[in-house]
Structure formats: structure tokens, C-alpha cells
Image (cartoon, rainbow, N blue to C red; front, side, top):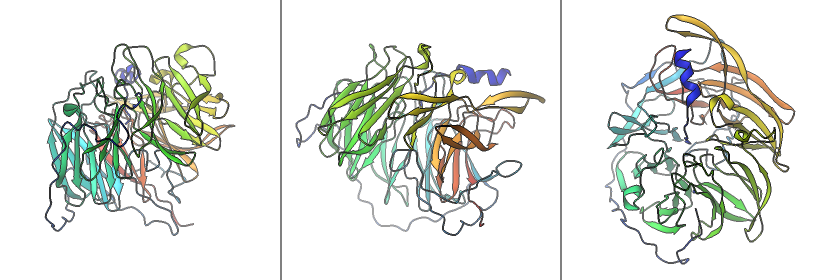
Length: 505
């Protein structure tokens, strides 16, 4: 109980942006330090080799005939919706639990891996270095590694490693470090193409939890919630040269929510929920035209409490955008007109208000949309977390449940039966179901519908705190990050690959 009680006192935001634009459309923005692009001579890409940090257990099954598979090259997937198109996955978890295909002994950090083809890229911190691993997704064998120094120390005692996931695009991979280090590497070799430091160049001070949001790849642009004190709030960088293309906003700081793309009224837009450390606390939603950085509108949305954050990504559905936050903030749905003028459809209070049942405030988890309803793990802290279904059109809570069960834990040589839960989990919609990952390492198949939820199956991958990153599924394989030591086995932090492939019927 002593070790587990620590789970009840977290105040964290992982995820793993604003104001009106000031630059003239089409004008050349001021770039404090355009990076030098390296001319790389052609070289043969390295093959894979066994890696002493990786333990390989057994090869996965063959993919079932007709299975649909996809890459997962960035956080939340290409569409930014936590929805996967993979099919023919396991319907039931193996008796006795899931055994890893392979596992990487990792350092600290909260990033999830990104995958394209035969390349998996994953950053983590060991001592005072960040190690970017490039591994084969199916075997864990190593292609290359890239290291860079770091001095970041988390102010609240959480892990001081990377938060943002890699972004893979063609023959390149992009990484954003917790101190604003921004790299473009050649995917096949790990060689540096260009690098810069966003925080130093734009004079962004360290805030509550460091630089968190994953850059959004939009066409030829990498869009980041920079959050400089006097602007820019958001900046777009050319993916080939690393040079600033446009800048937007001059007041709101960097949040912990990644920028989200969307197409509304046939036009492409980027939605950034801004707002990190500031006094008074300010922040809100920006709608930005990615072609030129023009801001359609600014919508203030932020708790008034100093120690508060915006961390849950916006949810774009049709011509609407939903934003949500805890710290007595709540949830708001905006409808955008053809000129992108926003109007409020509905508002809900946060459960910290204790004003009734029609409440929702998302801390850092990502909401998902299915058949007219929003599903999410609501709640700021573990004890008040619950799984909620909200009617998207009406802003009404349809049901609220706390997934809970009894589990036997072996702590300090003694077995204890305890009531455990998903707490603040994450949901990935995949293969006609919901794959939910709980904070303590539980993995569940759920049927989510407006009549309630049904637990189809459940397994326990590991008994570890701070399991906050969304699970990744690619080519029928599941990737999960264990970020703290297992309370029962004492195994340290790991990146684990599991076989989620179904069998031929």
C-alpha cells in the first residue's frame, strides 16, 4: 500500500497553443538563427545488429490474410485523432498475460515511439544524455543511435527526459527535446541534416514541465507552439531547411497539448491550444491557416489558477472544435462559420466544481469521437478519474463509469488484494473497438457505445506508475512505454513490443 499510495498524489501534465497573428501575410518572418543545412554525401544505410539494451523473446505471428496495417509516424497518428485503421487484431488476450516480442531497457522520459516501414524511432534519457534509438519494429535490432546532452531538471520531480514523440516523414525524422532542441536527422543513417534550439533562439524560459507538444507536420511545414514571451506563440518551420516560414501570436505561452490538424469548410486549418506557465494564467485556442500563418480567431480558454495548464489536444469534428481542461476549467464546443468565426455551442464545468453530473474536464488524455459521441478519461487526479461518454451535439453526459476490479499485488514479498482501476487512461480506436491503456499498465479491449461500456477483455502488462503515453499499433504489433519501475517485479523502465496480431479463422 505504501508504494501504491504514491499514485494518488500526482499533479502532472504530459501529453505526451495563442493570439492573433501580427506578421503581414507573405512577409519574410524574423528568424533569430536559421540553421545550417548539411550536405550529406551518399552512403550505404547501416543494417540491423543485436543490441545489448534489447531483449528479444519470440517472433510475432504472421499477419492474418487481408489484415489492414499502417505506419504510425507521429503522435496520435497522421490525422491527429487517436484512431488506427489496423484490422484483424487479437480479440482476446493470451491466458497468463501478454509476453513481449522484445523489450528495450530505457531511461527516463514520456515519449512514445514513431514507426515508418522498417524503422522505429524512440528517444529517452540516460544520465545527462538523450539517446535517440532507431530500431527494427519487429525485432528490436538496432540501426543507429543519436545522442545529445541535456541538463533539464523537472521542477516537480517527474522524469526529466523527452516528452515529444518523433515525427517521421519520408527519409527524415524530426525530434523536439524537452529543452527545445530541434533536430532533423536522416532516417536511414541518423546523420544530422540540421539542428537548432527553439527555446534559446526565441528566449523561451523553462516552464512547469518543459517542452512537451509534438511538432505537427503539415505539408512542407513543421508547426510548433513555441510560446515565446513576446511572440511568436506558434511558428512554422520549413521541413527541408529548418528555417522559419511564418510566426503567429504574441502573448500566450507554450502548452502541453500538441497542435492538431483539421479540414473545415473544405479548408485546411491547424488548431493550437496554448497556455503554459504565466502569471496571471492565460491561454486559449488559435485557429491558424497553415498556408500563411493567418489567425482566424483567438478563443481564451484557461484556468485562472497559476499552477494550471492546457494539456489535452483539441478535438476537431466536422465544423466544430472541442477544448477541455481541468483545474476548474471544463469543456467547450465551438462551431466555426464559413468565415471561421467561432460561436459557442455548449459549455460544461470541470468536476472540481462539484456542481452536478454534467461535468467534464480533461487533464492530459486525448478524447476520441465515435458515432456522435465523445469518449474520454475525465479527471485531474487519479482518485477522481472516470470514463465518460458525452453527447457531442448536446454537451450532455450520457454516462460516467469508473472501470474498477480486484487485483492481487505482490509487494515486499506479501500478496495484497486491492481495488484497481484504469485511473487517467488513454483510448485508441482500432479494429472496431477501443484499446484502453490504464495508468498502472492495464490493457483493456472495450466496446464503447451510448448505452454504456463493456469490458471485452483485460490484461496487466506491468505494475508501474506514470503510464501516460497513448499505445501505438503498427503492422499488428503493440508498443507501450513503461516509465517507472514495476512495483512487483522491480523491472526498470522499458519500451515493450507485443504481438497483437489475430489468428486466421
